[in-house]
Structure formats: structure tokens, C-alpha cells
Image (tube, rainbow, N blue to C red; front, side):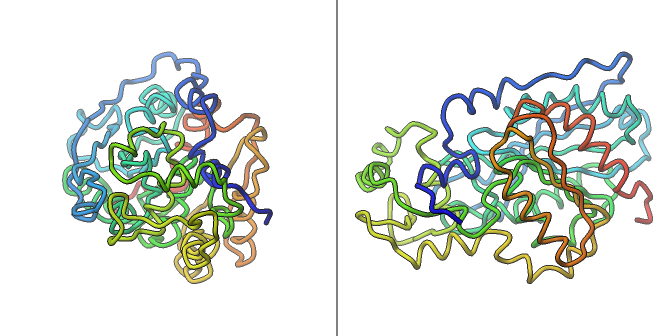
Amino acid sequence: MKSRTIAQVAAALCLAVGASVVSAQVMTDRPTVVAGAAKVRIDAITVHSPSVAGNLEGNSADREVYVVLPPSYDREPTRRYPVVYALHGYFIGAKQWMGEIHMPQTAEGAFAKGTPEMIVVLPDSKTRHLGSLYASGSTVGDFENFIATDLIAYIDSHYRTLATPASRGLVGHSMGGYGATRIGIKHADKFGALYVMSPGGLTPGGFGGTPNLEAMARFETIKTLEDLNKLEGIQRGPLAVAAAFSPNPNKPPLFLDLPYEQGQLRPDILAKWHANAPLAFIDQYVGGLRGYRAIAIEIGDKDGPGTDPKALHEALNTYGIENTFTIYDGDHTNRLGFRIQDHVLPFFGRNLSFDAGG
């Protein structure tokens, strides 16, 4: 794979791709309202995550979560529902993710068009550097197990769910697509169906390469949190990756190592970044992946070369694991509402179990 600059590293997950894309994340196309669609109820809750607690960055263990309850939830008090966990991308949180995918309109539209009713859960994983990468480490916190363990346990104990893997779905977009792939591979025993939208960072080499010396010099001047606050949000992408993949508890105030120091490559640190590429560890989890009822992968035809989702598709094919790979008409964000309403939720409606027996 060709070398990438540190700025391009961030772009692999839409971590630092400039104002045009950041703006697009909150100005996506809205589907037409489906006439007569019944209303859902949204609970805005806080979920405490023991897995995130105690992280060196000070990211709150009390996480904002939005729970979309289907139209029949309140009027059918004994009915239980499958659950879909939907992971947001970099730079945004759960509330902005809701706007990006036009929730609740798209859930209401999907149900009105015939998708069986389900619960949709949208957790917030925004951090000091604007994204956790759904990783697990002492610096950023264990967001992988926030999703795969703490959040599932909370939702199953507080809502009328079908609390079996066959009735749980996982989907994510952009950084969330990376997170859905990472968690979906390593915790396949928790979910019955997986949907990966426009992911980045899946292949070894997707993070790291020839350094952007100007960016690296800027990072090396950060001695205090006040210095950090002088960085614009989109400049923090490499710090987000480093906090997630190369934590260093002995290096305040950021508690991380970058793979370049004074312009020189640090192979040991770069190796840590590469090791977190899902396609670097997928071979060790093939048995679990065979348990999925369905796996879907997609990307817009105007959203870069699409090498990461295609590589995931091909890796699954290598092991004979059934999956679909779709290239649709769109860029990184503009068609998200349509994809959620007309493809993602119907996919889970077809492939999750709506039976209490699993």
C-alpha cells in the first residue's frame, strides 16, 4: 500500500478531511416523509460505563445514548424487540449522528414501508480528540467494551429487548464503520447481523506512512492542555489514532506516542497502529464470524477508492463467509438518510430474529 501522510492517516477515517466534509456531515439529503408513518419515541439517557471509567484523558464514563423505541412499544407492554446498535463517525457525537441520518424520520419511514419494528440505540463515543475509534486502552478508555458489554447489558436490563445475539444488530458509518468492523469481528458472539458503512482504517497501513513534518512539529510543541486547545478540531485526527492505539501512561499530558518523533519513524509505535487494523486480526476470529446470519458492506461510488470495504468483502469471501458488497450512487455522507431508511433497517428486519426463542 502506498505511504500516506499523517494528514491522510486521519482522512482514512474521515478524521481530518477538511471543512467541506465536516459540513456535509450535518447537511445530508433528507428522504421524503412517508405519509401516515406512525411516530416513534426517543429516550435520551445516560449510561454509565465501567469500561470507560478511569481513562487518562478524562473522557466521561457517563455516556449520552439515544434510544429509538418503535411505534408499538408503549401500546404493547408485553412485546419484546430486536435491537440495532448504530455507531457514529469521527468529529460528531450521538446527537449530531441523529441529525445526519435524519432520525427519527428514517426509522418511522422504514417501519411504515414494512420493516418489522425494532429498537435502535445510538451511543455517544466522542472523546477529547473527537473520536474513540471504538478502541480499548488506558488513555482513551475501553469504548470497545462500552459497546459490546456495558451498553448491551444496560439496554437489555432497562428495555423490553429480545436479549439474544440472534436479535442484535450492529451498524456503523465512517469511524463507526471501523468500529462496527472491529467490534463485529472480535465480539461476533454478541450479534446476529452486521452492517458496515463507508469504513476506513481496516487494512494494515491504513494508518501511518510518510510524516507530515509540519503537523508532527506542531504536536511536539504540546506541553499542556492549553496548548492542545489551540488545535482546530480537524487537526486532532492523528492524536485520536494515537490515543486509541498507542497509549503511554508515562507521557503526560496527552498520554500517547506518535509513530514519528522529530521526523523519525518509530517502527514499534507504527506496528501498534497496524495491529489494530481489523484485517490484521480477522483470521483469528473466523469461527465467530461464521455465526452471523448476514453481513453487509457498502460505500458510495464518489467516496474515495473504496479499497477498505472491498478488502473486507474479499477477506470474508476467502473464508467462504457469505456477505454482500454494495457500491451506491453517493459520496461519504449525502445519502445516509436514504441508506438507513431503505437499506440498513430493512436489512436488519430481514436478518434479525423476532422470535423470543432466538
